[in-house]
Image 1: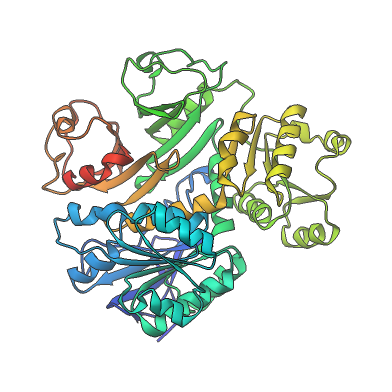
Image 2: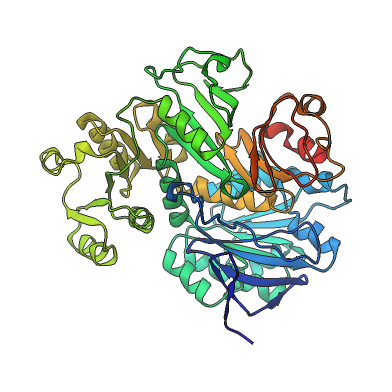
Length: 546
């Protein structure tokens, strides 16, 4: 029986088809909005839950990541432990005290995405990486604890050589969408492995959604759409480098760069902290992480991580910037690349009317027809006279989304020179990220890094409600539901945190839909959702205690 049934109170539509996936998973697609698919990994076998639910009361800039989520159930703990707990450094084995052998993970494609995932999984899992490039394979052999195989991942012989019949998880992360889909389909012919496909084209994602998870793909991530969603999410707060929502929208985490003229520059956190519903979590300075304390001094150039209510974090954002740095209303996107197009559509979907500059006549006409609320202008974005004539200098935000890092750097710096308040540039080479920001670009977004982090976040999902990586995974902000046996339960925070590593900060607590700002005397109760800032190097230990 198939069809669509509404989900009461969720604002979503759910297909009534249920498919039994290999490994005794029950898979039911749940449609929220257009995005990527994240199956909910439920640590309670037999109970069906939906992940990534979005609070309809959130303001449009607090909507988080648009997503299509899926529900899963498990009929035994062994399957949950072996597949759902594919997690970085085998964290779930410690958190649940299960004796779980490392799972076998096959990664096809050793570019930035594949290598980032392999680096995070190699310590506790049996990782195999397949790539066509002999030099890349040789480098991986010596630099990582993985089995590197030279070959074509679309060929069944290569997959067999990698041990596909024993694989638990296969990640297709090549730069070719069709190849990634073919890889997942080939895997399903000979293995029960869970499959993840990385794609760039939103149309392919929508086709997959329309066929209710066909092609042998269990989880799909659209790189360009994810980058566009990240750009939109960050754009909502002045000076923000990163923004994420937790606890159904009750809690916002944000990272801000402190400018030389910021009112909080050279103040201690105790002096700067005048917010009832916000916690200072950490300061990043010259590559070092400082866990926030009352005596910590905020310096110009620091990046400060805060956790609290959306209103408090927004108030802090307004306070640390100059008065003219208000809400972004005038949005200019330069380049109708796929990311530029998706970014314009993301702003349109949230009620904005952005402007988009594209030099190619045919492409400009194509996107103009597809974006009814976007003003598309055909011109060279480096033409200063045109930019001045069209008042681009008055824009609150310019997004550089051309095909080429050098071009994006050039137009971003040109926009800054004209007086644009804020710039976000898309970069393909992750090594340029720091350089871009050092020379004046406010935020640099690398689509491959966003994709790798999203897939890595997926591997956490069995034992955390949500996770966000900070400063290229130097630290992580996690949301957990506290159980009866947690080290936090029924103890004042000052007492409970004494049993946690020093690099852990409790940022917020959600209890029965209400936000509680943690103070030393606050007692955490079973069932509370706690949002914590954690140094990535101690995350294993923290999850084991919590």
